[in-house]
Amino acid sequence: AVAVVAAVAFLLLEARSPHPVVPLGLFRTRAVAVAVAAGAAVSVAFYGTVFVFSLFFQQVQHRSALAAGLMFLPMTGLIAVTNIAAGRLTSHRGPRLPMLVGQSLAAAGLLLLLYVDEDTPSMAVAALLVPTALGCALSVPPLTAAMMDAVPPSRAGLAAGVLNSARQVAAGLGIAVFGTLLAGGFEPGMRQSLALGAGLLTATALATVGLRPSGTVT
Image 1 (cartoon, rainbow, N blue to C red):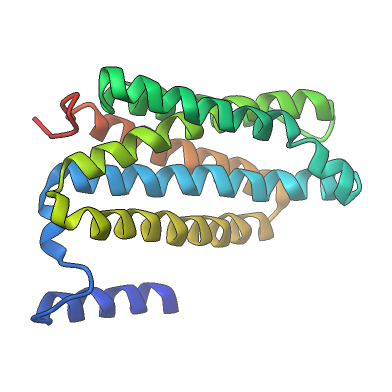
Image 2 (cartoon, helix red, strand yellow; image 1 turned 180 degrees about the vertical axis):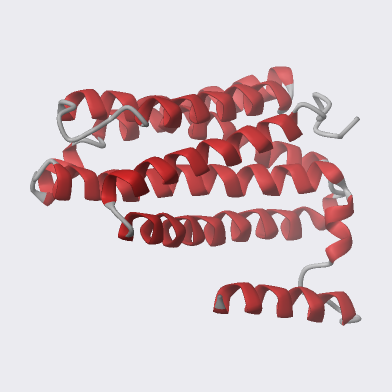
């Protein structure tokens, strides 16, 4: 609640300030709004999922912290490779295609994780985490490119700062919300968290459909 009030107060101050830290007019460019929303959704989904399954491996499947960490190796090992591939794909096809594929893959991965329970083998869970990780990794380079394409060079630094700030805030907020849902019962909370993440990614994927290959919006 405090965070929401602080965010509203910040926006009101920025709207009235003659020299705002974040010019709200930046978001009138819809490609910017789409990129920021997609970046936030990806952060909620990725970091929220890592948070949930860190607890799942330890509290539900009773693994040690080290063993739980090892379960994330398959997904983390593929992220760097996917980031590089996403950058190359973006340079050839523009940001829309990899953003759509990435967000759709991540959302599908979260829906697959809805079927996980305490009896699911840990290695199977580790494998099911991979689609979401790959989808998120595939999304970040093109959404950054879409953001940069939508602003003049003089505002490139500002745009990058806004995008990174939105992603960091969304990651923290996602973990807080997912943690609150888990507090009401782990397995129901886990499924609610995954469904919420999938819903956010689906919404931003639909918004991405309106992007031109160059990152502008039709």
